[in-house]
Length: 145
Image 1 (spheres, rainbow, N blue to C red):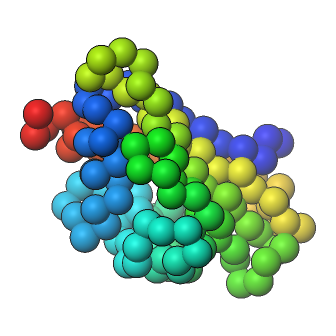
Image 2 (cartoon, rainbow, N blue to C red; image 1 turned 90 degrees about the horizontal axis):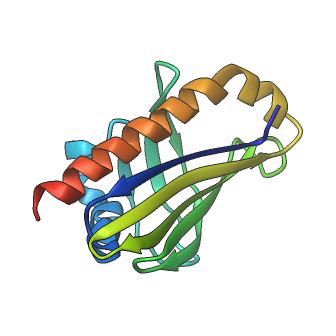
Image 3 (cartoon, rainbow, N blue to C red; image 1 turned 45 degrees about the vertical axis):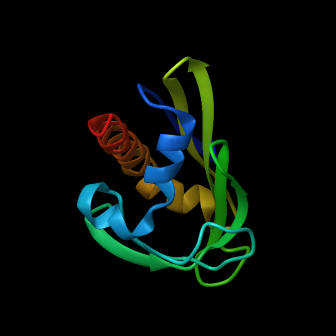
């Protein structure tokens, strides 16, 4: 089984607008169906407190921000319990494809001794949640143009 899940979407907005929506954490409860809450700052080294809904359950995890390039890239590393059991490197890549049109790629690379087992249980729904979040982000980013 692949240990990477990705989802891409084209958004009719600038990279700066997408970055604004993606990193204005206080507004997540208003639009995000997957990661329903984020506390913290989008700066490298910061610890976030993320609440997500997956597989009918709500989970809180506390990843560390590993990448934060405004308008280009945002990433964190989260772990289940302790590092090495089930770790996820979650990323958002933002690329201009045409003036006023941007591709957002959301993905996660999983590792750890239980990664294959856990992905077998939640992988399909996780991918669907990436798609749902991307669609909601697109709607929000395009709505205020």
